Image 1 (cartoon, helix red, strand yellow):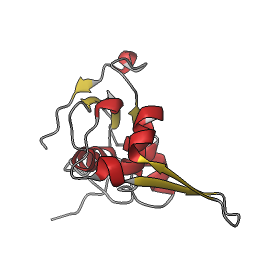
Image 2 (cartoon, one colour):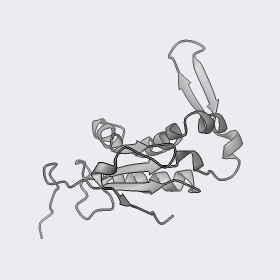
Image 3 (tube, one colour):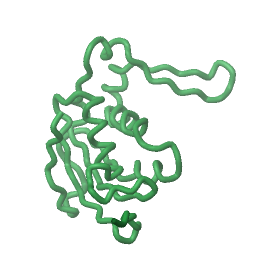
Length: 144
């Protein structure tokens, strides 16, 4: 028996569209991260980018469980003393809902060069329309 390792030249990247309407944020992010990494394929190799492109639409309709809608916060720091900035989940959802899904998926990818390369395969949009129709993406309904 021989273990096969996927080369980046042999990887096939497909395009998928996911509708985030009424989906739970964390559960959807896990499925998207697995699809972007290629963990759902039999040719998965940890050191190679063998995943697919994922386009998420209706980012503003994402749901969270429990009291996260009121309590969850997003933090940024300028690296200067007193430079901590805090934004509540509900404010981010109103201003830039794409950021919520991007941050959830980014946290589930490897923290290295390969993870940054994989993250570029995630496209998140507010509303129904997206500019990737020419790639003929397949509609994907993850089982959550």
